[in-house]
Length: 292
Image (cartoon, rainbow, N blue to C red):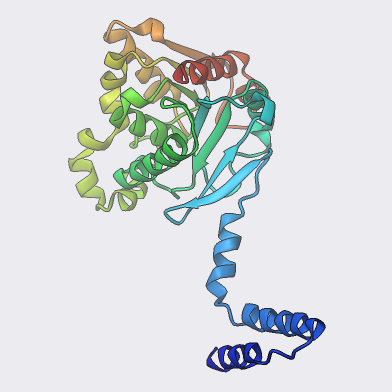
């Protein structure tokens, strides 16, 4: 770089250089300069690029790939209604969800998420979701109360964040969501995300397990809509969504939960999970309510 810089200074001192030669000179310098850039810059650009299923934007927040699916310009609003989606992992949201997200965008509702890896609702994953929330609400004009949408283990993400931030949530939608760490992924797999051993997580489970704190959401009156198959062997209905709905009923706000049971369905790509009109209408309605 010292040699290039010295050449630039020397050349700029030559006031007799013709315009064509000057332009040619700077083309060469820029080419050489680009070649000397560290590979980290290119790696970061590649990291930012997240393949999206619909028009939007991908970017980094605290080094984590994040995204926004954006409605058409004419449908955007000053206080932009939005859905916080989880789990944002490589390949998610996927093609099975495309129709659903198209409906959100057509209604003027944006969708956003952050790839926190296998966070399982851990404190660190909550911090990163808060960073996404701050980016959108403080810098981009998004509404203060999004609707949350958790698919499968994304239920751990959104329920944990909602329990910690009930005043920032307009509703929770779920597609066969996990609420109990013991059922999925199991404490042994979840423990590293919490920075604990299996034994440490088990001894503090009442503090960290979302299913133990559903009453926080019930007392806050957070509306919920869930679709879950009754033959789900991966995320059992009775230990997750059914318990969640029962806790609301015990708190006297059972009407705030709509649990849709998909008979004979397991943890799969059945189209009905992703084209559930009741869930889509709920998410749109609550996202719009959060913008008011």
